[in-house]
Amino acid sequence: SKFVLGDDGSKTYKLTVANSVKSIKICATKVSSEATLTGTGTKTLSVGTKTYKVKVKSASGSTRTYKIQVTRK
Image 1 (cartoon, helix red, strand yellow):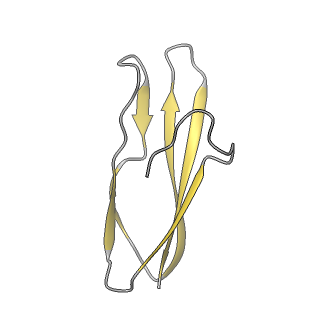
Image 2 (tube, rainbow, N blue to C red; image 1 turned 30 degrees about the vertical axis):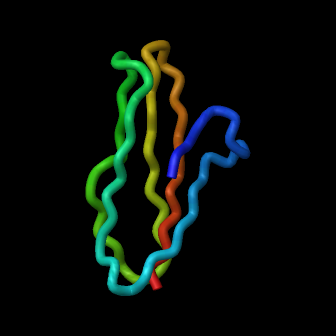
């Protein structure tokens, strides 16, 4: 899924995966090469709900946080 400016404002994406899914890979791309990005990579899932945060810090120092809430059945 994709987060874009003008989304519903919550910046939270929720998804449910089957019990057989043991990991996910969070990929993100920066709009500016001067921004820093954290929170990406492969995440091991346990049964239940876990929230992962992807943070983008602009060159001017402002930070935007996106949340990815994953529920493994």
